[in-house]
Length: 108
Image (tube, rainbow, N blue to C red; front, side, top):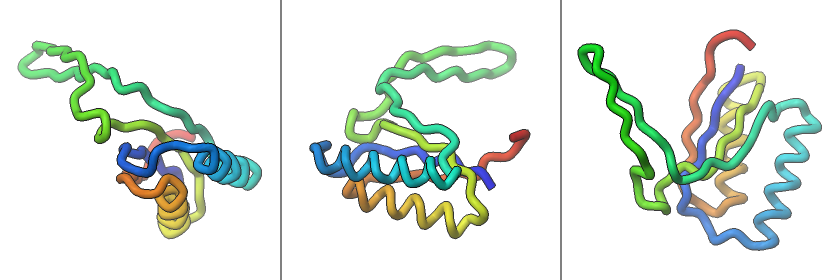
């Protein structure tokens, strides 16, 4: 089962310990073959929406910086429970904020 986890800001301010803890977590998941991709996301984005064949594109950012998506991880796990456990560990490392977890369907 694959899950995409996106993290909203709001945790503790980044410091050397946070970076070390996150690096260890990423290394562990990589060695286990669980982590498929990870990265940070910039605050600027574009929203494309359609209605009756008309496309509207709106430039972001759309939320306050503290609410923007700041990172993502794509993981491949055996169960929803395992994905939830990993997202809980992540939130503990970053000291708060909100992490969304969505199952990813489709070809692997």
